[in-house]
Amino acid sequence: MKRKRKKINYTVLIMALSGLVFLIIFNYLPMFGIVIGFKDMDYVLNIKKALKTSDFVGLQNFVAFLKDEEFKNIMINT
View 1 (spheres, rainbow, N blue to C red):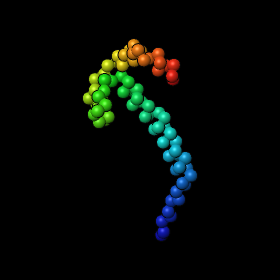
View 2: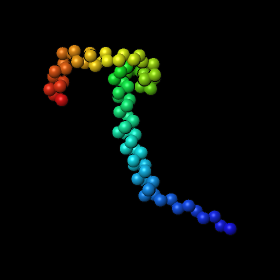
View 3: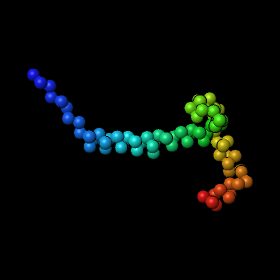
View 4: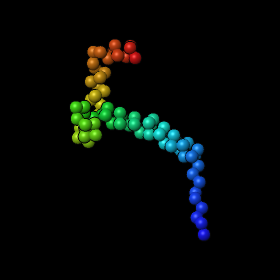
């Protein structure tokens, strides 16, 4: 008795993989930016190590950005 080989539908596979890549790029990668915004990170370190070992500072990074004297120019240029 011969076994039948399953036929792989490459069209469906490519469509599913493209959706998965889209989710990773546009949903999960920006989450790292949000986490970085709330931590006091040393960017000289490895990014993976910096995410694990840096202290949580809350909104201090955003307050410092808003109080910066260049904030007005940055917002105008943006």
